[in-house]
Picture (tube, rainbow, N blue to C red):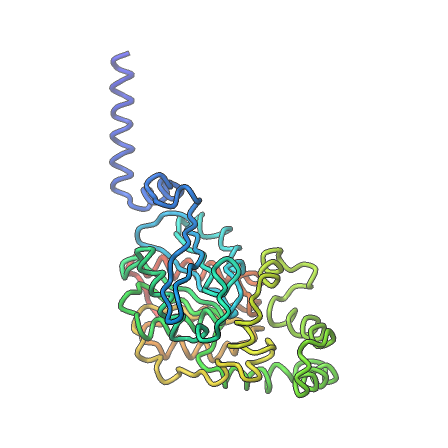
Length: 348
């Protein structure tokens, strides 16, 4: 019995020291341990108070996992869409012990939805992200900011003001110029549509007949399944369909316009352009572009060279939601970037 006790003790010491000497094993062992967290009761969900020029509100966040050196805050697209477009990350990040935070921006479905257009500005959203960062105790030693589409605009704008707080930046499926995005849609993607379809779409837009069911049918059938998510509509993931059901059209139309075919109408983002500021971003950055995207992949490759420490990830089978239609490329490249930055092994 005494011999057995000694063997068990030696084994425990060996395992303890091995875990202590291997930080990755320690992270993996504690990845799903909520016992020391103040959000255990809610399963990782926190409603974070946000101060704005027109009042105080709350935004919804949900933290998944524990990793002291890799914490990825996810900025969804839209504006006015939801974190639900990222739900496929559940299939990849936990296996790599990567901590990530879902987050619905103010105005989106799970957060407060005030009806005040003064709130929907890039500058105000940047300050919101900063307040979320502080509330979640994210800092330059662990904070990765990832934005897709409109979220990419917000991520770039945040980095231009607050990159001192970042460990890494990920810009997914977003150009650095709204006018160039519009030009790409008009001159490159539009002419690839069947001529009669493109003509009808332009006629609806000319007449501002965006609510016509035929207009939406044409976009979904001929444009969205080619450039938003390359699957037949009946095969679109449930999370994507749920996200579209939850969209806040007031925010979306005010900033992006009534169409996904470029930024149209009087949308506030119509003239947004930060190309000449990108060279000031020094934090390690990953830029993701896709062959069939609504955004020009060559422009996104250019962004990766314009920032000082950029890397480009090209998804040859992907579209705007390449986390779904080119998952293998998307997640292997994204995870490698996070690992490289975390291990101080990042190279362009």
